[in-house]
Length: 364
Image 1 (cartoon, rainbow, N blue to C red):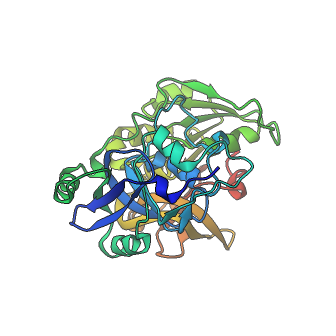
Image 2 (image 1 turned 60 degrees about the vertical axis):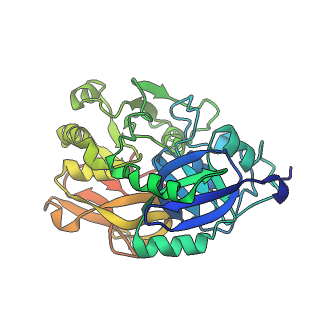
């Protein structure tokens, strides 16, 4: 399965709101898309990134030089929690080089074909090193990614006029519309814990649901705006606040409902859910200059060990705003920001990063 570089004839452009432009070759859908341009330092897992609901509203630049060599397969999609999602929520993809060969036994298709099928604008031959340095120096930017014949000045103006990601309601299109029991019949469970876990769906990743199901738990997904009263009527053994995209400040009513659950049921928050749990406990949120996306070193303070974690977030909790009954459980070793919280008395905790196999037994 090959793609010749000559097959990608159309030029493309990434135009930032500050006037900086990057030129490349279109390898996806021919069109135009706006979003917040960010960089991701992950060395693998591009399909998971493209299909991860928490990347809604973002144009992602991959810092790994070559992307696409393992192709695409249906098992690695992260948007399976709410079928059918016709288009992955990512706004665009930027690469230094797209692989001209698919070489993986699990592959059922190529990355360019997937991008075109799902109408994702994508550019190869982008100077991703220069773009990353620019974003590190000047922060994330609103941008336009376009493939085809477009006027550069017009694209810069569109980027300036596009909404900021903090102003968008990104959760509503992703959350389930009504409670639904989630299962994977073909997934072998490691145990039978017989626990009922309510997952408040802000755009949950499929892999997180798989980890819970692998423990034998009964998983019920509920809409983001489900009241505390409705959740407690379901008599859960625990509540998971899922990951998802966007600004937690736009979900204050959700944080207010989470606050009503405190002391009544065990709670575990992940990423956006971690931030919402923090808000429910009275903690403030601030925006990072360019965010954490990709691999980040995190110190587990209780265990005294460092974990290499997968992350995607642009906001963090303010340490000085923590109430005395809450302690910091995890810290980012690059910049000292909060990566986890733990209540000193109640079964309430959260992490800013994505759970891996090492964390899957913490909640159940």
